[in-house]
Image (cartoon, rainbow, N blue to C red; front, side):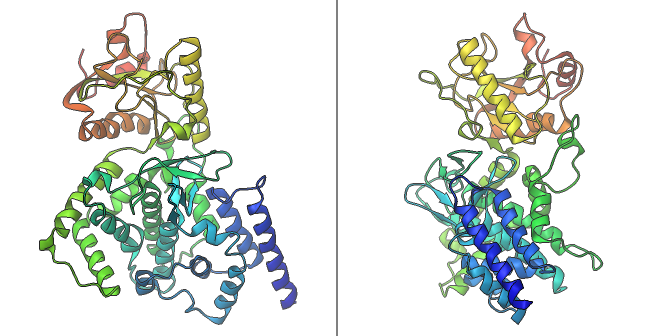
Length: 482
């Protein structure tokens, strides 16, 4: 019976190898495909502890660096039963798990070891899984959590702050990128020169921090879920009609920025990063570099940039990610900073979008209408807010829009998808616009700090935009002017 069980498990992994490497099959580079592969392993081994599985995945992908071993131990330092599971997992490493987890950036700007999640963002699996393993270790061994921040964000941020010294701090983090195809993602290309802390590494680090912290805080009577359930609960969610993100109280990926901030805002991040760097140099037998040499200032400047870029600003889905067609002609640059923010609703589409696929379809539909029916060069809005927890890039920060006749050169035009004549947008969507996007614009030099908010109808006579209900709401906002 034992031989039959082992044979069945090997056949299952062979099936995974063939399916996931097949060009017309499920692709390696989305989160759902990774979850399905993990679930296949779990189903073949009932009762397999999630800690044993995540350790085995670490060994399969060869991620036993000195810092990981320092906090989590060597992945091959397991019981005999876990060693058997690890040995079997190794059989598929070259065909699936190693390719899925192993993080590199090629000379051509392709980032590997990242996956497209259901919400439209891209996540590196290494820091995600290390955070989960740290939390599981603390829970199962009933010890205080150690290493969650250094393994998920600390080391990556610290080393990135010290790299690219000829560049300003804002260029030592990121960038984001885009997939060749969001339905069948195979290649993720970065938009600029890669740092050690690409957006995918930071997304994965924030997710690993959140999930690892949650797991470490489970009570004695609570048992952790299977790894596939942990991932699926966080990434594969459905928002309710009418309420969207307002009804969400659980930990889900669109909230990663606010959740990671809530965990870390009471921590002295500067000291945490400095301690992480000191440990890196100690483990690698590198002489400690005194704070007098500028390390402390580089970390301080880097953290200020991190907070502004990844906590103050909302996640903005880039044009290439939602499938924008090219701008017709040459975009006209704006002269920044701008004085005004003009608020719109889309009217059509009339319903709030609650997922990345539906919001992306709405963006493409509006761009098609604006370009083909209106004859404009591009989608008119500077930015568009969905009810899925994200902002979508239209003309963006630097290019003239076609949103508020006679006023396009002096303000940004931002719309929320939906018809808000009789009802309000979700509170979450309004807060993304009112607080997060505005704060990001001021910090980035796009808006003056004493900017003025107008509804579309105030400066263009023929429109009721942004709808009676929404206009009544924005009249209560700071910076609104009659």
